[in-house]
Each structure stands twice: as structure tokens, then as C-alpha cells.
Length: 171
Image (cartoon, rainbow, N blue to C red; front, side, top):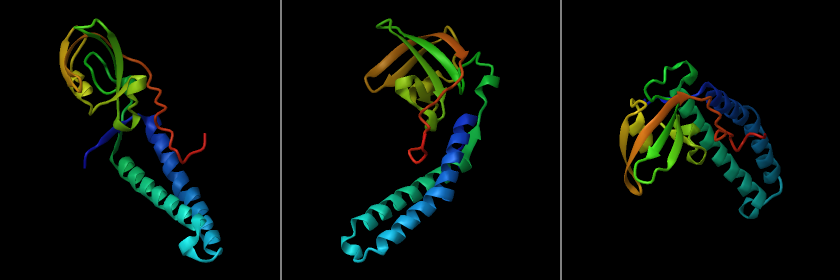
């Protein structure tokens, strides 16, 4: 079983979503299905079919969350050294060819949000960076081809991942 590193905040949010689905949403959808059943002919009952589809999606999400949380390994990145790039490190890179600067924070797969600079520890970029330190050079094979970067800075910055906002949870 492969462990899934994540922040304590992400673990808490996923646990809350799972509890909500099991304790509240299951009962609500079951009630909607029962009410739709009472409307008669199930073959042409759109409410019934919509509720059954939602139930299937919810049960799949419950299974996904149960698996993910069973493999979760919470990491408090604020307590790691960050002299070398590791989980939770924020890294500033310069593209050797273009001079463009990039900033990434290495997070768990469930927290990844590349548009906000949060990249999964399992991504090609993160794999190339892990274990490196300030001043090192790194070569990465990206979809656009091979790129070389200079590692300008390695530090810790608090991780504020909004990617984990289960669509089932309100607010």
C-alpha cells in the first residue's frame, strides 16, 4: 500500500468531507430516492434516475476518500529542515534559457494546484527537485521538452491549499 503524504489540514478537510457524505448526504439521497419511487413508474421517472446517479457518484467518492485516508501520511512541513528540497519546500527556480523565474511548493497529490504553484511530489518537476539544494542546477523533462533550471532559493512557506474543498461540502 503506497502512502499518500499530505498536510494535516488536508487530512482534516478530507475527513470532514467523508463524515459529511456518510452521516448526512447518504441519508438525504436515500430520502430523495424514496420520494421519487413514490411518484410511480421508475422507467420514466427523471427524479429517481437523477438521485440514483447522484448516489452512485457519492458512493464512489466515499470509496475514494476511504482509500485515500487509509493511506494518508500527515506531514508537518513547518518542522522539516528545508536545506534540501523536500515535501513542503517552496522553491524558486530560474529557467536557464529564458531567465524566467518560477516558484513552486511541493505538496501531496490531493493538494496539487499547479496554477497556484502547488505541485505534486509525484510530478516530474518535483521528482527532479527532491533532495537538491540552493545553488544546484536541475534538468527536467517536461511536456515541452528538456529544461534546465537554477535553484535560487529553498525555504518553507505555509501551505494554504484551497484545492481540497470537496464539492459535496457546502462552504
